[in-house]
Image (cartoon, rainbow, N blue to C red):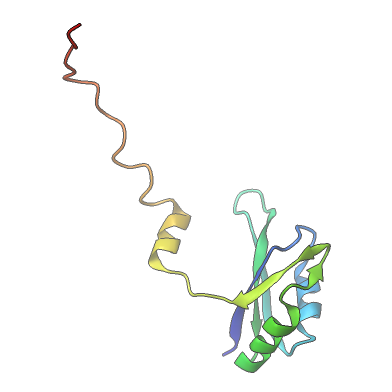
Length: 111
């Protein structure tokens, strides 16, 4: 199995084909995914590239981090696995509960 890389600061005009061609300079590209907004379908400015070996992934990091793609300097780092908190937050769970209420039983203040 390959090593997944995080690619940040992507131009909204960058395509998966652009990234495939760029990362192919560092080795064999297994897959490319530019993350898009679930509702609008617009790119979110980051994506993931999976290289076939960890050596090729390290080569891609050292070779391509800071490279200009469509007038933006991309950041390339090793992707970190999502945590339980990340997946819960992406679904919106755990937010906005328990707030509000009150108002009843207020005491009047003496002047």
